[in-house]
Image 1 (cartoon, rainbow, N blue to C red):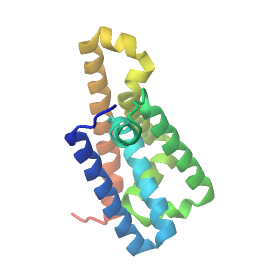
Image 2: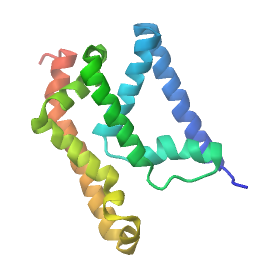
Image 3: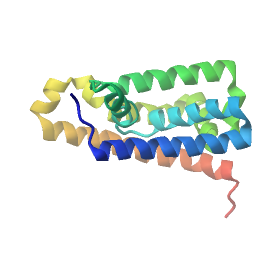
Image 4: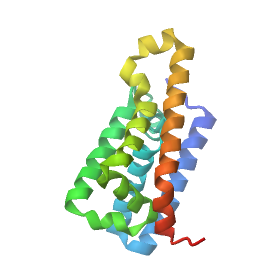
Length: 176
């Protein structure tokens, strides 16, 4: 029998409540169909543009809580789903990107290969580093690999902030 710690259950509950509140606010503003689509686009924005262990937090914990089984590389499923969702949205309903600030910024990042795809590249390195090198070699030289993964994650965050700053100023209509 598997046990779920109170902290894991609390963390999952907090993520679920935040997701529910965001979805409800989108439903009020854009209607049900668009709200669900925008919520998933916001989720894909977080997956693609911010390097972190999103797979373990957003997918592996709920599956462990519900079934008791661990996912080995949940980040692969998360990235695949986010990329497929963006391909579908980009070619079928691109106007959906224009409804919120974060999805509009995601559209800019996806539609402009240079320099914005560098954000996606470094974020993927930061998130999927353990998958790329294999878990056996990751744990054999733990300090080196954690340092490299930290470097890739920080590089992705810095690139995201640097490249997206001008776009956010334009989107938010900020004047000096």
